[in-house]
Length: 104
Image 1 (cartoon, one colour):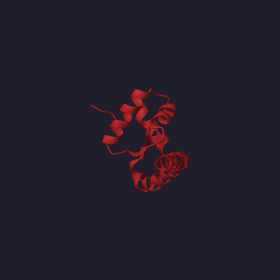
Image 2 (tube, helix red, strand yellow; image 1 turned 45 degrees about the horizontal axis):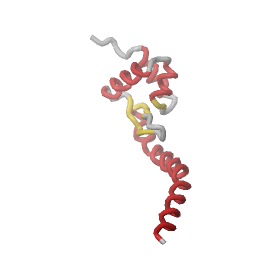
Image 3 (cartoon, rainbow, N blue to C red; image 1 turned 120 degrees about the vertical axis):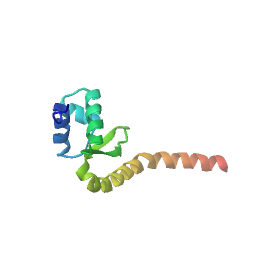
Image 4 (tube, one colour; image 1 turned 180 degrees about the horizontal axis):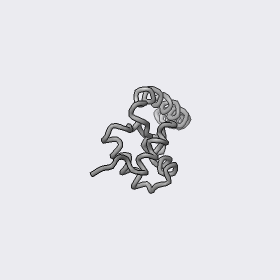
């Protein structure tokens, strides 16, 4: 018999009101273990109160309130694409140059 959201779930909801965070950032903010934070996020997601925006470059899920998903999701791919372009730009050019020289 549930009495509502627990301490970790309430802390997650309060933290996400300030903006999207990763699971690790939420665990630090709420001062909870990673497992209990993931479990709380799964239950909040099943209840439709939080939503996953996608993955960060470090492979962590980025979470936001479900009400903000539409507005945040439109910004997230642009941020991610810009970061990916910054990281991969130099690597791609070096690899392309090597492949081009090898083909000649």
